Length: 156
Image (tube, rainbow, N blue to C red; front, side, top):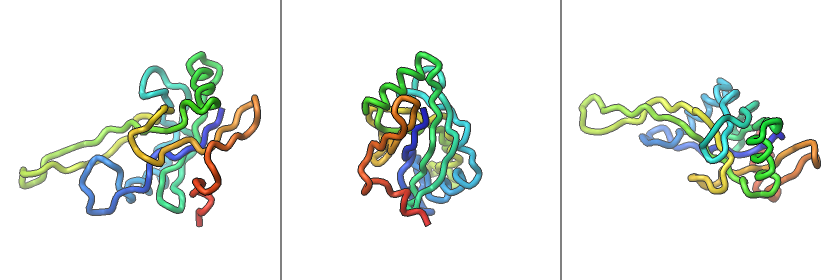
């Protein structure tokens, strides 16, 4: 099963110092294709069910991705069924953030963020991170959101 979805909403501004991704960081992830090959899990648990095969930023700066779910495994087949049934309808990124003390030592600074997995989930921690469509051998392509939610069609 192939799943298209939004993995991260629009990034934060350049002066942001926190745990969320900045726009520039998302641009670097998309341009370097470093998100490709990242494992897909269910609810941030268990073995990999598949991997990210493609990613890009849409016109609104959201990180979109295509996931390839391996339905030959029991776990992958179950996860695909949850996507088909609309139960696993959102995405959630699992990533690590390198946090360090500032040079003055009086505050913390967020450093490098590394994506370690993306999960199919019932309810994600961030708004606007959801499955947009899926395609499988059972019934072709199914769209899970209305066309007004398809911001990636606005790509320039």
